[in-house]
Image (tube, rainbow, N blue to C red; front, side, top):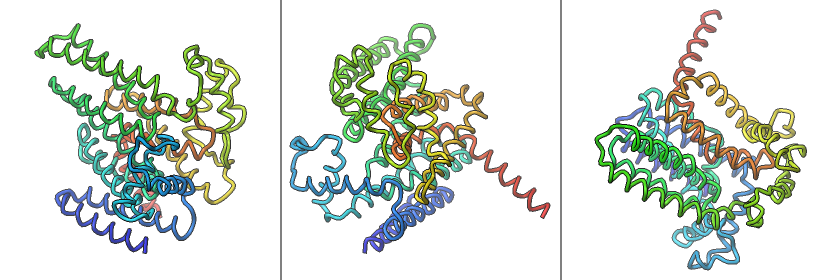
Amino acid sequence: MEILSLIIFAVVITAILTLLFKNNKNLKSILAVALICKLIFFVINEDFINILDSDMSEIWIEKAFEMLSLTEFGKIAPYEKMYAYSFLVSKLFNIFIANKIIPIFCSILISIFSVILFYKTLNLFLDEKSSISGTWVYALFPSFINYSVLPLREIYIQFFILLQLHFFIRYLLDKKLSRFIWFAFIIIILFPHYYLHGGVILIIFPMFIYVFSVEMHKLLFDEFKENKNLKMFSLIILSMCFVFLLVDYYENFIFKIPYLSNIPYNSIKALDLNPIFQKFSFYQKGNLTFPSFLIPSSNLEFIILLPVRLIYFLFSPFFWQINNISHLFALLDSLIYFLLILVIIFNYNIIKKNKILFFCLITFIFLALVFLIGTGNSGTAIRHRAKFAVLILTVCAPFFNIYFYNCKSFLKKIRSYL
């Protein structure tokens, strides 16, 4: 019955999207294939083998059932605010039926909107061919399809990051003073981040630093026709919002990050990372755990091991860690990240000259460094990096079309010799 309901849902969504994008055959094809892949993953998870993190989704659904009687989110105690997603799911249960198929419907719907939004985002600064090839990769990205058929929060976090990226690129391309409105939207989106995952709020730091430095440089040194007083007022308001956010985040938000919770304020203030190091051993668990030597015992050791932890965060699990068939999907995911990094290395000179691509690269590295602190196994690494993988896909998007064309040419040459 659940599979039949999902098929009917997919058919209806396909029909609606066909009407909306009847003039864009390429995008229609991408959406149709993406929906088919999601249905296949759903069937595999329900009737054959458990896909990645399907066991974790049960925890969130159980919490949602426990919260069915709650009427206000403010009365969520004794539950932690990290279960805000479960509270939302419980409200969906109240509106429709108490069945896990409801949040799965929503996840698939949000993932389809994300594909459309990613195409629209690339279309802001890339040509049509590059936008389509980049959207194909995004729509068929294995971990995205995986999480889109699970009642988890990852697909929502990814959607809001993509929305912020979309607004930020609009800000970069907008030459009028009204561009500050786009940045205001970025700040507003921080609130769903707070309830979905506190660590993702840190994405505002590279964005604000870029905006403030560039706008101040224009204000002080560049000649432009904009109203200087109005621009200065906009910068002051923006700075006040950022300072307020920084103070509030430091006092409240930062302690919603799992690996920073319950750490004494004085320890963070004194840069004493030992309480964090003690938590590393807690996160070093599971079938695909990171090596024990990656647990630092001092601040210096933490800095020295940081590059190695980053390698494990981005590229694990490695082939020597695979010990059952379910780990093959995780290996595929790590292989894709390895290929994406190669694309960046080979095209770095082009990337660093493009402010949009370079900013996305810096932000991806920044978030990777933030999330690797609380990551101790490959399963958690896959889930965390999927949250902001849209950034690295945006960096690589201009080059996918070139590599696809080269692959076609290479295959044609092989066929000619056969």
